[in-house]
Amino acid sequence: MALRRVDVGPVDTFADGEIRRVEVEGRGLAIVRQGDAWYALRDVCPHQGARLSDGRVGGTALARQPGDEIVLGRVGEILSCPWHGWEYDVRTGRSLCEPEKVRVRTYPVRVEDGRVVVEMD
View 1 (cartoon, rainbow, N blue to C red):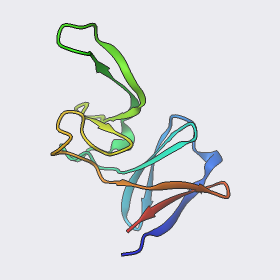
View 2 (tube, one colour):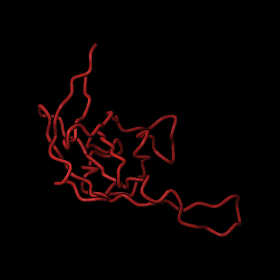
View 3 (spheres, helix red, strand yellow):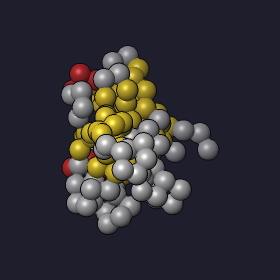
């Protein structure tokens, strides 16, 4: 099946670090801008259905091994659900807790002629 290109708005209307909900044919998408990087995810948390666009993009707590100092890492790559804090990688949609079992659908995003374009099936 060929992917359709859907224009979701002009680049300059999306602030850096913003998560914005857009509706495409009744389907909610969370569009994330991180500088020149763009991500689109289905706007539903698989855990209990919260809108991920109401969450925040940040980092996550990391340690090299048990007992090591915990540091903030992967800043700008992690989308946290607003209800229970479930964390998802904005690049892959995979949950940080159960990456092989839980994921959010992702869609390719491009910038074309100053417009944000999402590729959907």
